[in-house]
Length: 83
Image 1 (cartoon, rainbow, N blue to C red):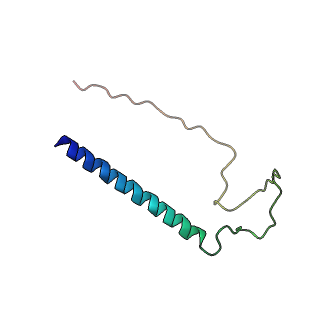
Image 2: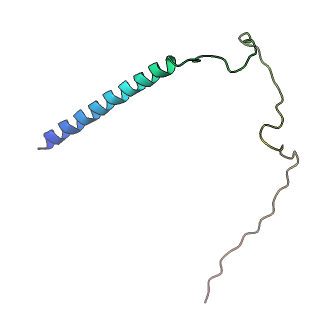
Image 3: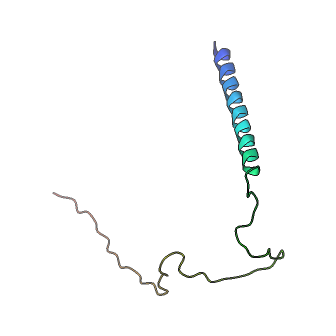
């Protein structure tokens, strides 16, 4: 009886793995055939490999953080046993 349940479990796992791989293959093929696949998002010409550009982007993520930070004080509170 034990071998029958192990065989059924292994068969179920194998079937699920095959279905998973088929779904992955189908999604990849569907995404590759989609119009506009592989297009660049910007209209700028592609840069040569190894070219580095650093740009400052302001205003995309709300107000900037202050450069000066303040340390917060804290106080340790201990519970006193009640008698």
